[in-house]
Structures are given as C-alpha cells and as structure tokens.
Length: 185
Image (cartoon, rainbow, N blue to C red; front, side, top):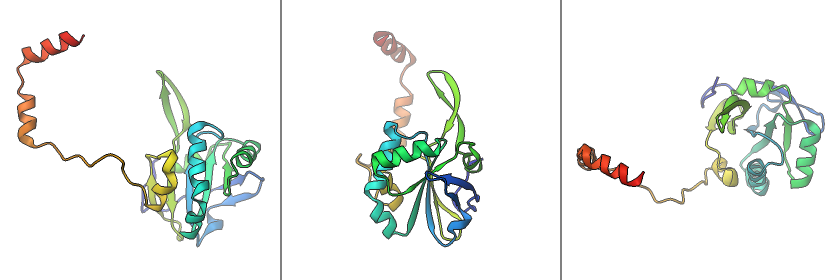
C-alpha cells in the first residue's frame, strides 16, 4: 500500500535508539521528516544520514523533527548515531510494523534474486498529521536539499523532440536498421 500526499499519515509506535517509545500521535503539532532507509552504516544510508546531519540546523529552523526508520535494532542505531554524530533519532522497526503501515517493506531484486527489503522513501508530514510530500527518488548525498526544496538539477533541461523528427527517425528502412545491428554485434 503506497501512501500519497494528501492522505493521513498512519500512527505508529516504535522504540528509538535509547529504548524510548516514539509515536506519530505524540508529535502532533510538529512537522515530521520520516525517512525509511535499508541499513545502518552502509554507504548510501550513511550519505543520506550525513546529508540530514549536516543540514540539521536548517531542518530545525524550518520546523522539522527528523526520524529515521530501519529494521536495525536499538544497539546498531546507537553505534550509527555515535559513529556519524547524528543529532536525530533512529527508530528500530525490527518487526517491520512501521514499514508495513507506510508501504516501505517491498520485494526487491538483485542479480535475478528476489528478496524483501526497505524502500528508500521519505514522508514529509505536516503538523496536522497529513502527508505533504512523498520523496521516492531519494538523492542520498543531497537529501536535505530535497526536503528543504533546494534541490537543483545539475543537468541542463532538455527540450522535447519535435514530432516531425520522431516520424523521420521511425521511418528508417528496416534493412538499414538490420545492417547497423549486425555491424555492432
């Protein structure tokens, strides 16, 4: 079940790295960045956490409470926080109950092997508990910028191809296309 912007964020209860119970309903009146990530201390997850750490003051100034969620346990979260000096809480969703409510426990595939894992997704939740934004294509190194709306594309904007050009390209003789394929192969 994928959640979308404009829907009510499901309430949850989970322990943080220190064993303290955290619930979304307990944060009513606060804006929440609820980000799901696969594992502590892996390259992509570390880059994402460090982007949030390095921009934490700006996130706080914008009124956000940051919560990271993974299937790792409290002990692993504490180590990750200490190693990377993270100023926000990490929730230990060992039983995947929060993942299930937010649709982030999904089937993945790597090298033809299917397995269950965490989808890297961030939910921006407003003070009233509604999902304002869902970030599904997380840029781990610039994630704070995505949240704060400062993300910019480094690639120049591409103009759409004109229909006339597409028709010409599609009308290439089949023999020419076959010869081109044979030469490459």
